[in-house]
Length: 84
Image (tube, rainbow, N blue to C red):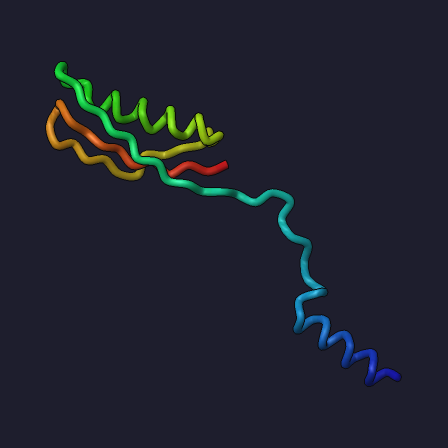
């Protein structure tokens, strides 16, 4: 009887049925790309506003800018990584 119980516990552990409880919250990460152009040299500002608008619309509040591409003061692209 003891061997059967140990075998069942071993099988359950291998199948993952006995494990630590899962985290209460799972994080979702998404990337957004904002584009901006301006005749007045505000392309980077507009690109960030575009990325923020996309993130807000998708329901992401915690964002970081991980890369940007400034072709000139008149054309820019930003890359954001957001989590919720």
